[in-house]
Length: 399
Image (cartoon, rainbow, N blue to C red; front, side, top):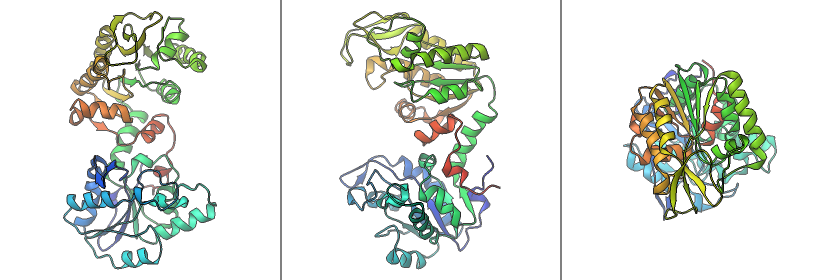
């Protein structure tokens, strides 16, 4: 995927319209976790240092197309002002004459943050016509000479500020953050350094079917953990006790196992499990093999599986991890996720962490800086891994 990047743009004396992802948790008007804001700083600072001015667009929460000040970008703009040396102004709206006047008066080296783009239904395109969405995007486009997207988290959405605004601006480029996502995820899927191992976890197989299927054509091994493993168990005729299962996906799980065998891909399931007699941190627990009796549920992979999976990771040259190995939020069931996490960090592979829960686990274990790439997009990285074209990336200018 060869897209124009921010470094290909001449931003001197230009107004740069940039879509960022400032969808951050806010409590009592204060940003709780500013990771997404700091992630956009390299692109923001690059524009300012190279003589441009910045008009920033973002969404925050789900205001459902109405101006609901509970979802204002003020806390995000306030936090940004603390992180940059430039003057930061929050516009009173997203579009309109007042905003237009602020944009036109914006001097080089300053930042104008537009209000939450989702205050308008035209952003998501729900409950309005395509013409109305186009008109909204066209007005946004009039605020910039060039466009930069650094919002991977929403790249899988064909929203106005991501994939329609680009129709009205000649040069549309990827920011540093988005470029890194495209580079790492793209390389892993298009030309991975082998052996290529995918670790797929999480509660449900339904959300990961397309990822597993796509990886069957690319991976040498796929390691399955989390609740989704027991739907595979059931497909193999194994006893699963009270473990999580998606009965309507058992047949499909069986087909995936057959496909893996036919393609010569090592699809590994847990050989032992940490089981509990209740879904609780203080439940009774024990380690069992790959057969789970009634009255017990598997909540983590067992020690033998941890060893097997960690050995597989150690010999890999590319590792993609999406989804935890167990209920790591509860201490008795965290060993699988954190052990795999450490193994990935220690390996000399290209390591790519994609998806909310895996990212949370990596951050909790303090090894994020030892990973090649920790993706900023949950749903977006999932769709990328499924081999889908993401509208927010497709819309950017080709080199």
